Image 1 (cartoon, one colour):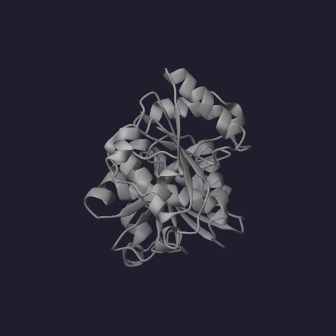
Image 2 (cartoon, rainbow, N blue to C red):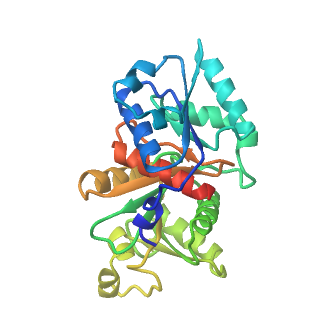
Length: 296
């Protein structure tokens, strides 16, 4: 699948995106671009009235009609109203504004009814990388610090459901390590072999590992190292062993490789857009479009 197929032709997409603490220029710019590129409505929750900030963008009246403000005296009331609106499906998507990821995650975890039957949350980042022939997904780059083997199995199950939702018929999953053969000196390589074995009879998923990064994304590299793999060089998803690897890889791709990205939290009953406050407006908008795409 190509990244552009997920974010192009977005004009017909609709839904109501709830943005928590959309009170700075960067977030409002993203909100306006979401309105321009889709038919969605956006509900802004916060303690600061962003009306003057919105007006400074000279927004068309048609867009203003699709912005809804929910302003309260304190954070607790903001989250209470947001929780009610999510529970009643008044809003379909939760989007992080000018607030920490930890605070949004705490809000989600405090409401068990927001979490689906797999009972596990992970972050998925979908990349368009100029030097790679298809979209590459990576998990987890922002949420799970040192996921266990069982955690990574649940992670892959979340990714499976997400991938089916956006149109994949089959998914190639590579388990990342620093070596291509299991060795007890490198625990991630042993974990990868065990996780791969768990999915050995799955029809939708082909899961292999361990892979060093070059073997996973370059078939010639795998051949040169004598790696017998059905999916090397044609990976759809990379599952990383811990957060340090995922976060570094994410930022390397966006800063050095000029990758475009859209990212979501998986495992909730509604899409959650959890981008970094340092992410570009384009990446925030792409993530919202991806979230809207999952509703259709």
